[in-house]
Amino acid sequence: MLCLSALLFRPLGFRLRHQLGARQRRAWDCGLFAGGLLPPLVFGITFGNLLQGVPFTFDDSMRLQYSGSFATLLNPFGLLAGLLSVSMLALHGATWLQQQGGGALRARARKAAILAAVATTVLFAAAGVWIACGIEGYRIDTMPDAGSRFMPIAKMVGRASGAWLDNYTRWPPTLALPIAAFAGALLSIRFSVRDQARAAFVASGVTVAAIILTAGAAMFPFVLPSSLAPGSSLTAWDAVASHASLATMFWMVVATMPVVICYTSWVQRLVRRSR
Image (cartoon, rainbow, N blue to C red; front, side, top):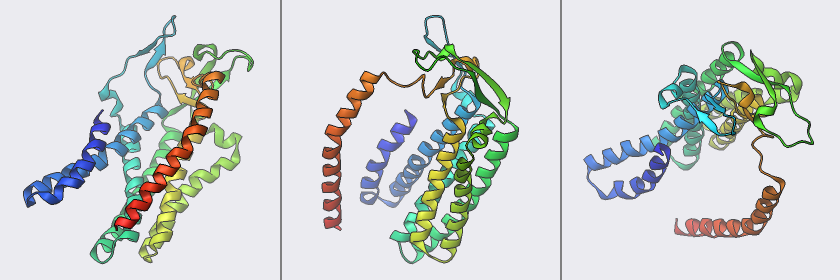
């Protein structure tokens, strides 16, 4: 709800800040800053808590029971993941501003990109060490037959230190993901120093994508691990919809996606003409 309010607040702030006095403009600027900061911070904290496990379980009737609170989400690793999320998106935004602005704005964007890239590199490395040494990961010990109907509590799940790194041992090509994250951040610094804005933007995009994919590759096939009852953890097979639902959604996407593409293209043409 907090993130939704921040996202809805931003368009209003952009529209009104130029129509008010200096004091009100500063207030709207602070609001816009908060609206841009909160969503990535909350998303990062959420993902950090997923890696640690969420305190939920299923009862005998397969009803979900959650025993956590908002305060428990604000743990040290969750906050670290939140800061990493903010820094990597700040890096991407700063490199975008390098392309769009000139003069003093471009210089400020270059400095911000360099600082954000350094912060992203340090925080990503710290999170990796913490996951490898200080957080118990999850691994599936036994699974029901592939031809049966999957139930969350039908499997056996264990926890062990460094278990989130199992997939990188099982599938060595996935090691390219964290390497690409570090390489993209370092290249963003290099290109920003040389004022090569477009190359810095591409490098920062690689960084953002690689960091997200690194976390996803580490967790697979887990979607929502349970810290109370590891066997209740949801995996990609437990959480998937039925074949009938997936087939219906597929044909709905086939029917509606051309409309979305045409509408988006039309809006982009209007925006370009109005500049």
